[in-house]
Length: 487
Image (cartoon, rainbow, N blue to C red; front, side, top):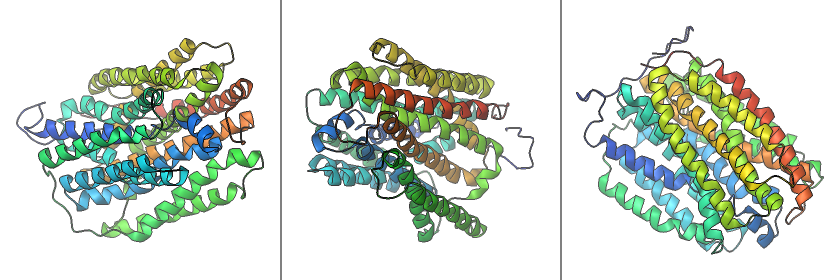
């Protein structure tokens, strides 16, 4: 139980009584493992095209602001749909959800592989994201349901590391592939992996919940799409607006987005009286959930935004090729895995504060170090900063997610998981829009084509100064996270 010192009732969900102490029940490990592996596969695609962005800009004759939508559209689609995953997990069986989602992901991957240009490429990315949207909430909710309390920190650390490890490894894989093949192979090589995961799910997954006879509120889904979509679109226009190359002022879609999100929240408050809300707003009555969510939003804004901007900076400033760029990203995923495993054990023993506070401070410091990049900065120096940044993020992800969800009553956890996933994906989309806009402003890079080295240095300084300023909010947020660990 977390002692919040507030009037909000927060009840930890008890682990299933398996009679095995801190051991998983027979078959539960297989379910969690399969969901982790499948989530890794689909989330690998979030940032897969980040390394390909310089190539796409040249080959397709597009601007950085347009090119970033191959990643931002993926993240935004997930942000729009994840609020509905609470409904999906209550309405349908685990096996049905998994097979449908993985099938959609496979179709989207096929469309991307066959796309002749940017339009169908974006369509394929969106279809992929429709399938991907449910996986993180499904993994987190299932892990919270099946994990014994004494091992929850360790298992949740691994489950929450997946959204960080997989996108970090995506650019690495892309760089290796692009050094030998064209960008279509980023989709082609994913097809057999997706099909294998689909077959494994059909053969091995079992249902662990009882579906509820609830209906989907279409108006809520439309308000979600309008609000979040317009908000991120407006943010993505900021960079081009400064250079005078956008047909509309960014404030207009931003205002529409804020109005849409406000209407969505109001609609959920009305519907939750009859348990018909797409996203139950009572989850925001738990202080730990709110504070942890805000910290994660800040971390994901910078984390995903950096994975888009850093390949552009490395290519233009250091001149490294796509193969070297791919290898550059590999150690980041390794660091995330190691730190996540260790932090889970620390959380189970001491709670979130010894992890989250140092992690936020170190993370902020790394972005300030990134602002010192110039023509004389070596690849090894940038790699060292990147590895420290990856480790700092891993210190925050698991503790914030576990603390947030453990502060909710059992019936609110599917909604909490959906909201937490929405916050992360929306943050990723916002991060891409904000940091690419800052990058564009810093280099006056609204024109199509590659940047000069001087432009890239200026762009890096502006983008990472923005990131460092944002990151400081995470430091402040961790100071307000509950002190006691969940028991």
